[in-house]
Image (tube, rainbow, N blue to C red):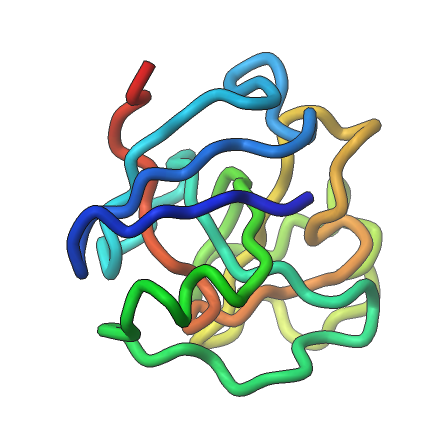
Length: 143
């Protein structure tokens, strides 16, 4: 799933959802506002850079204050935070982490899940997402 993002400022980004992976909370073409650099929390919805399938990311992470044109060159996804560093690994609901070492989510990583399990590419298949790939936290619908 990708998102169309338009930077309103360096800290605030308007994002249009593209896809159904977060239904029923967010539907295709819904618009949301994202606070760049806001600290994610379990249960909150975030916008993260989408990996290219199982191969990860072809480019280095964007700098925290990357210019708006650079944001538009990346592919983004909207997901809910299920676990953060230090939280227990949610092995039962995340098959890709069934054999992960340790008992806790490692530093610098997050578990991100789509609300619509049947239509979401997320940590269930990919595993951990680096926190540095999270653009920001969804704060408001801009409907």
